Length: 380
Image (cartoon, rainbow, N blue to C red; front, side):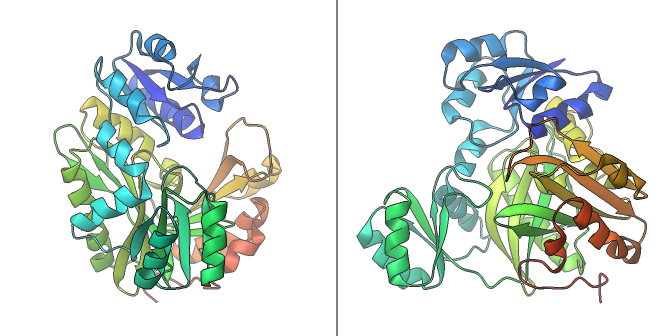
């Protein structure tokens, strides 16, 4: 069976590596001839909006998925007229608009930060009254890894951000004093079977994910069940097939929805070594209508992104139970070029190695997190 992937980045690359043991082959569509997924599968170079490129890409495929959510919805809909496109294009469409996705989740009864659409100065003034300050002004579409948004503490800053972000197509969100950022990976098969990975704690720097801890320290059964309930509602409402990632803020014992990604997700890279079945294999199992694999963790894992940094491979691999994933991309500042996963049988063992892991990853300042929180043993 031949699987088509819209996008040729590292997520597509890892999908292919997970799919080859299942007897699958892969073709990627990407505008760049240097897309790193081309190292492990057939690369079709072309624009997502080019009908001729889409036709060449679709020839001989059995189904199509995507590895990032900024693929034009029109491309997904066009392909869906010829072959299965999963997850469904309506999930892709919803995830591309921050206002639409928050309104969708709120309609399911999911808690969100306060938000307000902004298409000019009047909307901004109304939004500031509703949301309050400080707040985040974001573009509704596009932007990732901290791009396309501005923190505003005063009305003057809000006015400046409005102009800087184009004045229209924006969303104002209340700044949540969260305890930590967490994410949940959920997967739903064609027959409706669902599975959930444990909640993961995520640490960012400069708007970019630097470290994920799985399972999240202090994770309680009640918190896990709440996250799963959120995901279950979304999966059913979207008639979803594949892996869905929910990014959440934990505030006390509550979870507030931030964003969703209709694809495999960076915060799930730990599953390659740290779970019984990786997110990539489970995504493919779901698309193919195969039984889902166990999402149970294998002990405790940490995943550190390599952001514009090439470590000493030998030093990384000297660290027991460390696994290096190098994406074969040119190293540039701010670019994700690989990751390191570290797995241990106990939290105490993993915690003791975090400083070493983050130093190797080039992110030693993340040890305390952006919020200055310290890590303690789960349940402490």
